[in-house]
Structures are given as structure tokens and as C-alpha cells.
Image (cartoon, rainbow, N blue to C red; front, side, top):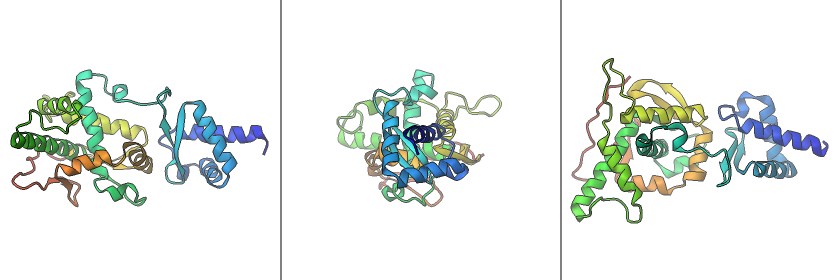
Length: 263
């Protein structure tokens, strides 16, 4: 191929990467270009150079997830909580929901490296995980006499936990829907945002909404979030049962009662 044809092919692969719901298994041209990237070092270098032109990095290119981007501080393509949660007061709840979805989906460190692993989360269980973490921080604060019970050097967690405690988990409306400012409604918006961007797939309506993870999400959590976030929640004594429900294994405490019926 000519240099122009190679450049066009690299840009074509970039264009597929900008379609987060698309995978190589669903598009033959995409699969061919992914295969070329993995077999042709010169083409791979060209793709990385083209990505840098958009202030992006290439995290992974594989047959499962396709092209997965990372961002640089300069890029215009980075997403933030503010992009999908417009109300400032709702953003702390959304930030905790993002963390808890990842932790619940990959509660064992080895799950992040297991290509066969598909995480399964529900809105209710995500909220329960954050609730249990909040209660454990309160318990530790009472035992040690500390004001907030948050890890040293992480003062931002103070405000996050306070926002979570102050917000009603469901706050149903007159027609039995969750209020738009309830914790469950905000967590639902986070999950829907992840689904729209190829990170989760909708799998049912039980427990407020059920979602499964994609290969793209697994790579993003593994490469960008790292192990520290998951380890911190695990250190609070939170485990996950075979049914996907978070449980609390610290002696003397029990998991909080559920506050929402399934469906």
C-alpha cells in the first residue's frame, strides 16, 4: 500500500474507535484493521501517531474490545461526571456510583485480567455497596475518635460520604417512580451513560436495572482506574456473593436492609 492508503486505513481504524458501541465482531472491516494493527508494527506506529494528533493514547486494540482510547490532559474528548450529570449537587453521588459499579463488577483483582469474566451489577446492589462502605467509615470513626473516618490524605471523601448519607436512596414519586434526585435515580443515569458509551450492556430490570460489563469497560477499569480503588473498598470488609449482592464481613456489623423491591 502507499503511504496515503496506510494513513487512510489508520484513520479509518480511529473512526471505528470513536464508535464505542461497535466491536470487531460486528464489523468485518473493523476486524480486518484490528488484525492488521496486531500484525504490522509500522501500521501500529502510524495509528499511535494519528491518535496523538487528537491528544489521545491507544490503550488497547484487540478482537474483543476493538480500539480503546485513553486521554491526555490536552484532549477535547475526555469525559467527566459533569458531562452527564448536570446538577452540581448530584455529582458526588454519581462519582461514588462510578466507583462502586467498577468495584462491584471486578471485586476480585484477578477479574480485571480474566478475559472470560463478565461483571454483573444492579442499581440496588451498587447503592448497597456504597451504603455499607459509608457505615464502615462511620464505625471506624467512632472507634478511633476521628471526625470523619476517611483515609488520611483524602479529604475529598468527607464530602462524598456526607452527600451520600444526606440523599434518600429511592424517594418515590406519586406514580411509584424513583425521584430524579434520589441515589438510585442518579446511579441509573450513570449506568445508562456507561451503556450508551459501550462500557455496560442492559441485561434486565430487576433490582432497579441490571447491567453486564463489556471488554471495553474491563480494559478501561484495568488500565485507567488501577487496583487502588478496588483495594480500598475491599479493605473496608465488603465482599460480593455468588448472586452479585455485596455483603459485609466485618465482625459485629450487618449489611443494611434493602430499600427497594426488584423490577
